Image (cartoon, rainbow, N blue to C red; front, side, top):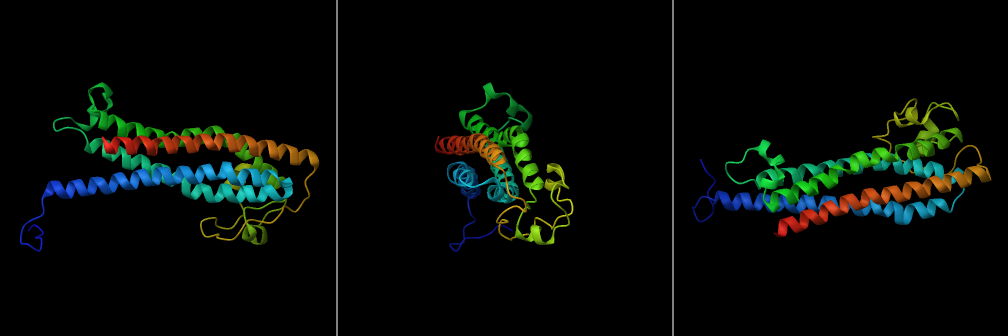
Length: 232
């Protein structure tokens, strides 16, 4: 039995569908743009502040940022990608199958617009892969200096300075559960950094900041393209 409105009439299916589309458009665009702003803030605000500190202090804070960011931004990028992809499929005219969506020349501007927004958000994942060597070097240096992922990790983690590789650190070897660890960053590493190490870390942070801005631009562009497409 259909749901009746207070006036006794059944709701118009097209109206319900339009409402769902608007909700998904709003959510996908908002997630894309908000995530892009969060990613950009790392490069615009956090990285310059970290570069002003010695490596013994900036390294554990950077490691903490990497951990928190890995729990948030991949999820937002995939959520926006899924949302825009669904909108593209929904915009296909009657008679066109899902497999025909790859025929871009035959698609409407609305379908291709949503596909472009989805692709831009999805591109954050492979682009992040290009950043792995820089990120892993920073994590490696943090481990070598006796740094930890967080205050709780420093107190309860079962490891010593230099015992873990960057990959083992990312995998959480001998560490507390990062998904339940809500503690603040470790204030500084166990070992004091040298002037050479301070310089290397500043340069690595600068490289990370530049590449990270690329991720922000991808997500931001995806949100803008999605917004323009929704207004067509």
